[in-house]
Image (cartoon, rainbow, N blue to C red; front, side):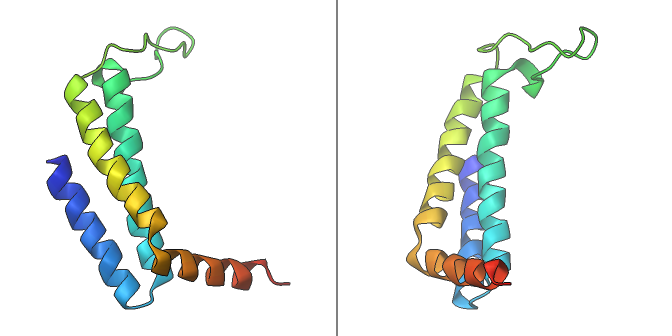
Length: 103
């Protein structure tokens, strides 16, 4: 499921780049990043619950999660890194930063 989902999001990322649409590409990249972080949380903590509700928000024990989610996280991580390394994306991001950083 992670391969299918991350591939679909990455394809949307590429389509946005073809249109020189930085914001859309950046949102797609962000969803890849969120897929990674969410899957890592489920890999690290049973049920993806990091903090205990009824114990003053103490951290739950790490390493109690689902090992399959670690593999899913790796799939999303690779697509996320591929998106960040894309030269067109990097160029559009640099242009966007120039615009937003100017007074």
